[in-house]
Image 1 (cartoon, helix red, strand yellow):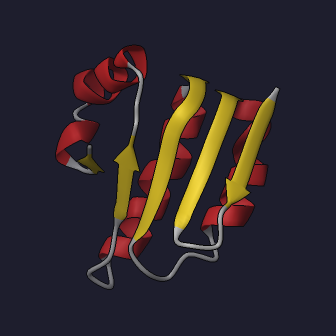
Image 2 (tube, rainbow, N blue to C red; image 1 turned 60 degrees about the vertical axis):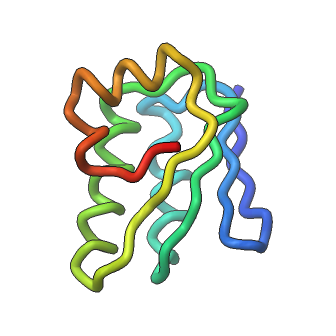
Length: 94
């Protein structure tokens, strides 16, 4: 199961498994972002390479206007995936 919720305060909360079957749904939410935004990963158990691609595409689009995504509350497994992929150099991660 996967859930994505925009809390209305600039934070988007991701929960469950973000895999290839959810990319269109997430892209639909993230494509509307035009300012710095926070993604809260506290409830995220898994992210696939397809999910990483959606986040990277959004980050690149926002960076074109000097904005970006800040990722918070990543579990150790997902934090390690970001580190190995070099995404810890691309995203602001808390």
